Length: 97
Image 1: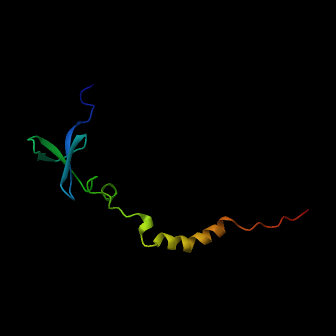
Image 2: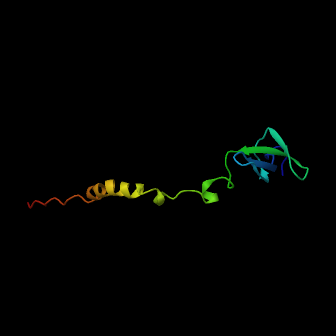
Image 3: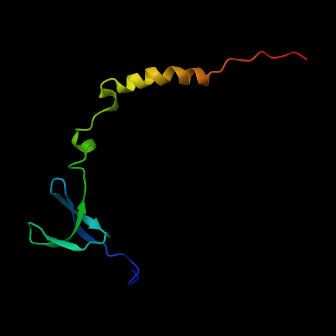
């Protein structure tokens, strides 16, 4: 590899701020802070707002759109019928020459 043209690819600790979950992976991300790990290593720290440990999709706490108290069904009842009428306009009679 040529010197000086590649990014600084190293181990980085990512910390989820919502639950203090930490994981280590390799990354090129720029960091300003360092953190001391349980095993004694000192790694660059990158703070995240959310991760797979706190995101509702991955934790199973995300609400389904269909379970929102009939809101989807009310929308379909209100606007579904008018959309169907607009999609299939009445055929105009063809005039003979």
